[in-house]
Length: 230
Image (cartoon, rainbow, N blue to C red):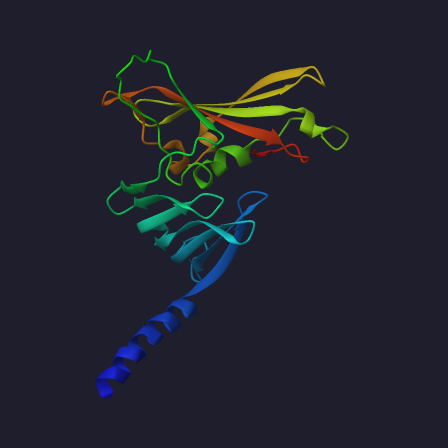
């Protein structure tokens, strides 16, 4: 009986100590996504413990753990329907699960090389999948003019990411068009606005050789002048 009591007592002590040393935080990643995580009370800039991101406050998009501000262990990523689409092991820096790409996803992949019949092509991959992984690129942009008296649904938008054969973000471009307003403009933003993790991809490959590629993200212009997924 004493041994059983000790086994029950030890996990309770660990949980209690974690609660005492950390504080929960919430952050809005986009109009529809909120992340929840913990930080050290002694250092609020350091994430420690479980992390989740929720779509519309109820659908899990991402789940994992932090240790000393670093992502550790296996993280799981889901689409907006709650279906698992990726697992990534941050300790080993490898994907351990990849679901087939949904043809309805608002992503297109272009290659600068000419493809021939029989070529083996691997698309560029972003940790986090086709929704959560691309939130930083969609949420960054704002139109350079006020939109309070504009019909923003009259605009079409797309983001173009250039990915080098080394798996680095080489260029970030936003295309905005509107036939109604006779507007067609391209914006190029400094890639240094993104942190290191958001400038890192698994590069595309052609017949096993890494190649230059482009990712096109279809978006719409929000009433606030930002961008969001279709």
